Amino acid sequence: MKKDIEIPIAEQVYVAVIHEWNEEFLEKNWNVYLINDRENTIEAAIAVSKGYEGDRKTSTMRHGLGDIKGKDFKKIEELQEDILAFTNEFFVTFFADNKLYEKRFIFEKNSINEANFRPLPVLEQEGILAV
Image 1: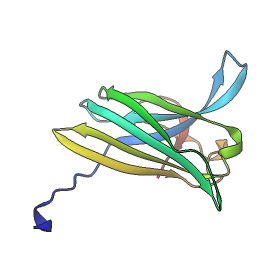
Image 2: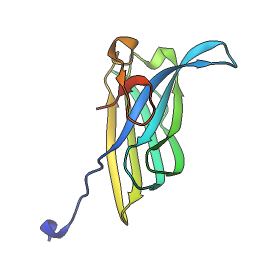
Image 3: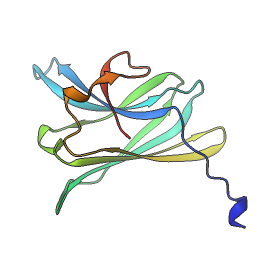
């Protein structure tokens, strides 16, 4: 019976962090994005985020992102500077091809820094991709 259960693998969907200038506050902020590098739309995307480091942890946040067209992205949240030292986890679920997909993305503690920047798909900027 278990062999009949199909667990689809979420491919070409990423979570990335970018260090962006904020005109309103005149400073750079760390923003997290969900990137859809697929050709088709992902539907009803939800991201659940949390951070932890030893006994300390952040609140669990739930973000309803809705539909994201192919080769597009949506902002999930802004990360405060003081939680960059935490392991930050994003659990993403979405529908595509009439199937439910899910994937856990993790930024290891202290990995969110400009030294780890690389070119990102779709966004045409440099940032950090979660593993």
